[in-house]
Length: 150
Image 1 (cartoon, helix red, strand yellow):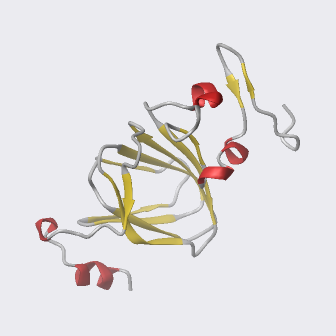
Image 2 (image 1 turned 180 degrees about the vertical axis):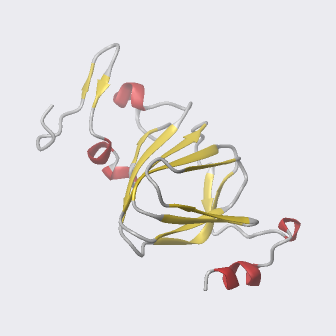
């Protein structure tokens, strides 16, 4: 396969593609239930996979949460700061990762140009929501979270 002339090929046993090109229509997500059946093995409710290329300074400033899915982010290049209601992490070395359970809100800031692979399982329709309100059960007020960003 020539990278410049991206071509999607599928045989009964293998799919050959390019994550960057195949995910372009879905913000980097190239495997998951959101794809039509014509995409074969890439259309699945078992897992979602995203090839994320982000620029320094890019951020998700609102809280997002997946109610049913566990999420894993693996850093390939760059540096990212990920916030959770009661914890923060910095992925800064190739291969660093963070995994979190379903129902845990998160947000992030790219500190450098970054490439990450994100896996979310299972892949459920309309499972992810943004602008999640943090409950008082989290023992972390909105002001405390905002103070940490400074």
